Image 1 (tube, one colour):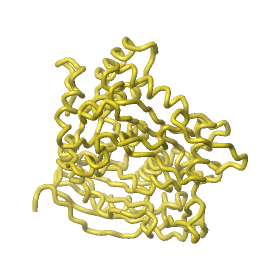
Image 2: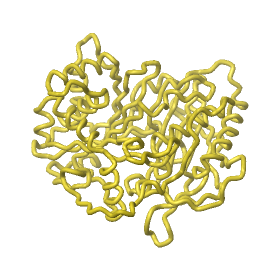
Image 3: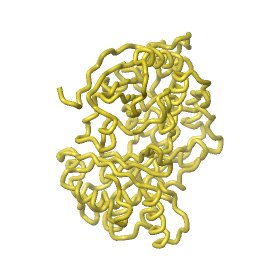
Image 4: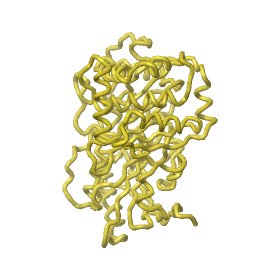
Length: 442
């Protein structure tokens, strides 16, 4: 058995410890989008903890999970479509339970300081893989894996239809506090999916390249879809320190009219340009960067604190290969900044009407999807083992993730799987702007 083995010891169903409502809850139009019917998978790795009684710790975790499911009882239900297939999805809440898995592995904590060797190398650290979230699978799976050096890996799988990144992170932090036996400090969970329409005052919604380019179909000039299916993807992992980020901000400000850019804007712009250059696509290929924008405080009516449904929509920056690769970093940063600024109350309502009436989904040609996990609060999750030494996905993918870095609050780890033929160029371009004194840790 190799050092990267994972062996399941136990898999059990955990139900809420107290009675919960017996009901059927409707999900929102945004929850029910076709492109969200997958599992959000997190991996948190903790350094070895001396003197930890494994049996007692597992008992505390299982007990805390049962307590957490009382208020978050839909996570113990089952997601399904309505009988006639119309309208939003629904959650049948009968306290069916979530799944808890305990396992042992030959991995050590240091193995997670690098990128995985291949995209699904860490797959077994969340053993129960849900391929179809509408076929009776639990909306929540938790796996605790004891590593060879005494470290602990905890994997989470959330049905994305039930909650988004913010909502799932709030649940994990509450779950961790219950495990430690301290009062839960986070907000009480709020369902309230009806707040996200569809809205009674119907508006005439027209999909066009200005308002919602993410839904437009563009020509595939380079076999983009086929390439990502045909070529092996190679995971990459790079850490941008505070110095790297400030250097990108200075470079961007010199080359544009804006005086201020966020870390997200400059890092995303830099990654997007490096990715585009490395793939060597035709100059006329239309490219889009899609990224989630939290709109909880962008709606006129707002959403209540503790709302854990999908409270985000996709921002979309669009340009051509020629402009993205030949123009400055400031050009790409401005596209991203403007895409963020477009997300307001009207924009969100338009998206809700579009996906409700047309079952529209974002196009995938020329698209890089980026998700920011570095602001979810996962780096604070403490089950009594301290803060996690590693926060990341179970599987590396063609979707780009911005992740927190242990003990470096302003640093960001970037994980992205790139086609084999492009990976060396991509990594070279990623590090090129920085002096030898501040090399990226790759």
